[in-house]
Length: 423
Image (tube, rainbow, N blue to C red):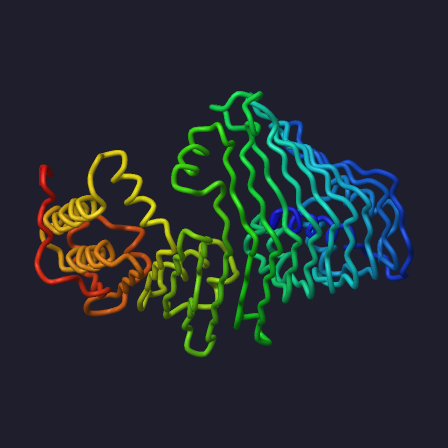
C-alpha cells in the first residue's frame, strides 16, 4: 500500500516541524485533520518523544491549521526521536474507510527518518454490489529522506520533492471484491480474490541523491474468480483455478553518462508463462527523478530510448488456448495454428509493408509454429528514439518507418490457409 505509507510519513513529518529548541514529549488524545468535503483523517493517542514542538503546535499540525508556507518552514527545522500513533482512520469523500494501526517512526530530522512502520491496514470501499475489502500486512521503510519537501509544499507541488529510501519490506495483503455478475449465494461465493505475498524494494543513491541501483520483488501473487462466474468458468476451462506468479524488477542509473539500464521488469506466472521487458535509455538527466513538474516533464521528453526488448516464454498457456479453440471450433490443433499463421502473415499489408511490422510478423509466426520463446528488440533505425516522439505520433506510418525491429527468425515461406479457412 505505497500511498498509505507515503501519506502517513508526510503527516508524521509535518507534526514534528516545530520552532521551540528544547526537546519535550507531547501526547494528543485525538486530532482530526479535515480534508475536502467529508474527507478526514482521525489520529488517536499520538505520542511524540523528544520533539521540538509544543502541545499547541503539534495539535495545529495534526489538524491542518498551518498554511503551506508555515508548514514548509517548520519541516526544515523538525526533529524528534520517536512518533507513535496506535491508530489512524482515513475517511474518504466517497465513503471509503481505512484504518491503519501501530504507526511508528524513529530518528526523524529534516524531512527524513531512520525508519517508518505500520502493523496492519484495513479498508472498506462501499459499492452497490457489495463492499470491497482491503487488508495490508506489516510494512517497514528504512533510511528515508525527502529533500526539497519544504520547498515543494510552499510551491504547492508535493511531487517536486524527491522521496528516497534504501529498503522496503512488506508482508503482503489481500483484496476482495464482489463480482457483480455472480449471485451472492452461488457455490464458492461471489467474490474476486487478489492476494500478494512478501514484497521487497532495495535502492541506493549517490552523494548528490541520484539513484544508482534498484531491485524489487513481489512473490506469491494470486488471483481467483468466483467458481460460478463467467471469468471463473473460463479460467477453469483452461485448467486454471487461479492465476499465480511473481514479479521482479532490477535497474541501474549511471549519473556520469546519464544512462538508465532497465535490466529486467518481469512477470512470471506458474503454468502460464513469463513476460519480461528490458531496455536502455540515454540522456536521462537528474531532474527526471525529482524537481519542479515542468522541468521533470521536459527532462523526460528529452531522454532517448536506445533500445527495448520483450521476451516471452510459454509455460502452458499457449497450448491450452490452442486446445480450447480446437475443441470449440471442431478443428485440429495444427489447423488452428495454420489459420493463426495465415492471419499474422497479413499484418504487414495493413501497414503498407512496414519493415518493423514484417519483423514482428515473422517472429510471431515462428512462435506459433514452435511456442517456446518469443523475443523482439526495438530501436531507432538511424538514431535513438526521443521519448517525446512516443507522445506525439501524428503519422503512424512515418513512425513505424523510424523503427528497427529484430526478433526470432520465422520459418521460410508464408503460412498456407487451413482447409475451410476464409483466408
